[in-house]
Length: 469
Image (cartoon, rainbow, N blue to C red; front, side, top):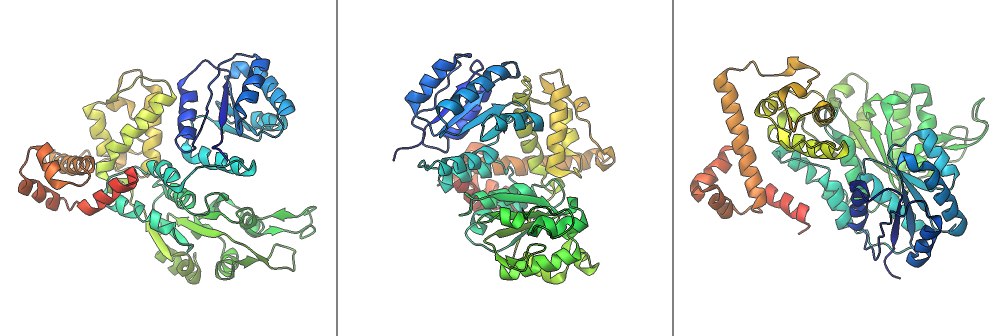
């Protein structure tokens, strides 16, 4: 059977968003034909295109001013081609609007901004359901997922480089790190790079579920299990069958639920509320916490036996304040992303803005940095982000009160580390080539590598992972 064809019916004039969506799909699926047709509201023309293309999935993209035309097109598509799934591409994912699209026959929707890590698994499942052959390979998915994990810091790279090896086994993983360091992103990477990628990834925030509802959420209930249980309901474990259940803030799970979760981890079986039957489940458990687990165990907040059962494979993410060389790298990444999203022509940061970013302690880590860059892009009217555009939430964390010499030494050290790492990455870990580009003799360049404790082997591994070699 040939590769699947994906058809985008675009009611907008050709734009960057349509091209972005095309690039995401075409990069991981061997697409024989991906048509971009800004045909206005010519429904008959669209239907003829579908007949000629015979696509596996149809994407309908429209602007808010074209809602009526898009709804009419969707109804025509569902009537003429009921076996072909239709996905609506919208600017915002408002619940009421999405419900209306689903009632009209859409099987799913995609909202801007487009992220490969969100879109590709859903498209993959649709292709599988329609029995179309797909060439979404693990290596191509890996490139998309790993691109979301940005950094050159030694500790960060050591953690990220464990992920491909972790995906090869089925053991539980405990991801630790402060709020905003990227724990859920790592969990998604583990799932989508594993053999379970075609099955559901179910994230649950244990701290956001009321204590009295935790068991019901995890294990589900049978009809009549309690007064208001008029029907049976599957729990999150059952929903994740064949896939991955990600338990965030695991230290917030009530102790009684911890006991039942421990039994499930040991036996891979559970009992729904009100049921007399034990059920087997094929689910991988990933857990995360921003707390110090040893302290949580000592205080009685986290059961010691559950901690040991979860911590089979530990994955620790460093805070952003310990990743000085990554701050500007991440800031530029978020600047490019947000400038594109909000259609702003912003090219970089002023020297004072860079200094302000560099000397902040980042208590909210990467998530805080992303939000601050987004706010600066939205509010800035200049082509360069200035220091005044960067509104820090907690200036008390800033270390800008250091002496001139201390600040200078810190900046020089971080510059040297960042420069050498970037150069070695560009040269694929070839020290002689990097020394030549830096116009330094090999011995002096090697001394700089030793001074900053840069692992050339880790950088070579990172380069191989990114290029798929």
